[in-house]
Length: 277
Image (cartoon, rainbow, N blue to C red; front, side, top):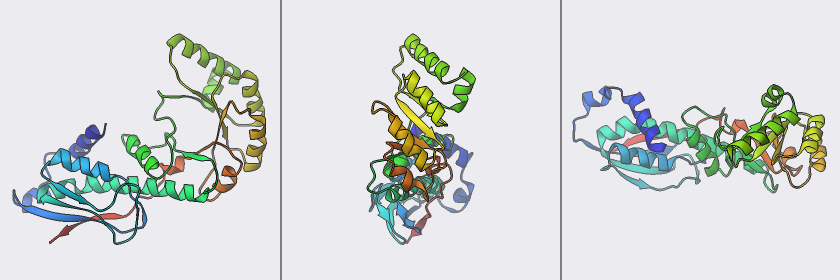
């Protein structure tokens, strides 16, 4: 998946050639460059950068001074690269785009975790990711200390409000899902979203799911709901939870909190690739 992503991204950027570089940099010219940190945060995407250089030009050499997951400060040098000047220039934007985006996500995730330090709640990402970059963004969440929810629509069943409404209600949605799993022989966990105490009671009466997501509950409502849910069910809170208000949610003891904000609206970390002489 990574190699395919790199190849498609390079084709998107290069087209029929990096004419800025081809115009003024002679073939065979050698150069050096350093990746400079311009903003504090958590580093992510270094392994992606390594693979970009390996695929484009195996003769490129990298000397790394940091690893993914390291906290970096302004002025830190992450790595030095030396080899073909043309390769360094033509791959510069892809390396930076990946590392800046991934480092921003890792930094955001680490910031969230710091807010709930001492709580047992685990932080999950969502499918609110950039098309084509989901695996990179979920990778960055893990580097930042979070955990991945389902990767896509195929590796877990998640019955959300629209599924329930289209199916005709909670009972019908669960029953149809169990029948589907029996008929297909698939071994998938079932999660169901509830929007109210009444829906929670319906789920508990019906049973047959693995995890209950409590959507848009206040911390006080969440605490009340958790007292109703037997230990056999995993519990997850989502909806309206931000870095600013997450602590009271985590203090309820809910097992998971999922946050689309880990990936969908993150500011990239400021990094720069600078030529060395």
